[in-house]
Length: 357
Image 1 (cartoon, rainbow, N blue to C red):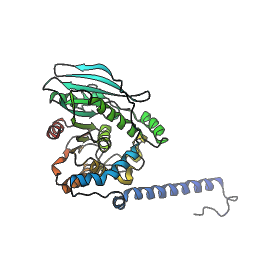
Image 2: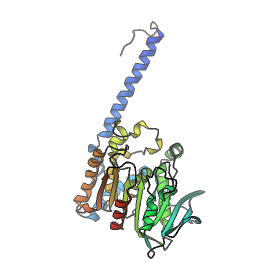
Image 3: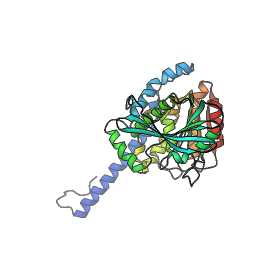
């Protein structure tokens, strides 16, 4: 790529054009190479996965190495503090349920927080749902407070009215602070995802000390970033027996690296906190659900939701369902594909949780 024979004789403008053009070419070559490497996923399947479908027990044993590598990818922060030191404060109460804020010791001075709620119908212990909020959101929104757009539909309240107890964890909710703490985690070889997954597990530990919560019948139902926490947490937190991934499940390779007007691509956003080292090495969404299998899973996906192009979701979900089909338990894997957008589907979700909890 010769723009001139001798830089000493070239005018400054020509030198600058050469610098710019060479940089453009190098950037484009690099992006093309890395995108192609990311999308060349099938070759990595044989290298990293060796699933055995002969029985559920054999299957679980065969994916255990992948489960451990996923925990390594998000980061294992180790055992929490010995004492939980719970602080319980009022949150909301009416004739149908009672809810409290609970603060627990997690690591050092770091606390885990969430809302714990129990219905006033039926008899304890109650089957329990972890209702996980999304980005820019809060536990309050899962209960229908401060939800002007109506995407949550008060689904935590609706679950309580249906006879479930509810745990609604509080996560760091804005992109810039998530990116800041993500950087701190990365320098330790971990991620913010791993730290907040540890927090969810701590809340489950506490629920096990409360007789109102039946943690043998424990589900998780998250929307958007909460859907991410559902699909990221359930592979390593096997006390969760059923999950609903709302407004997150995707054709992960395209979602992460392919710009397309039909969906948003994380590569072209400022959501730095999203990225996990080793994610696309072996963990598409269907692969992560294969670490949840044989536990029941539903994906709630709106055709009008800009986070995904729904035919690609169908394509990825077919791969997901194949794991359940080969174990002859296809009824445990369900896609709730609807005409709406980025929103909770209360009726189908409660029906699913009633069926499997």
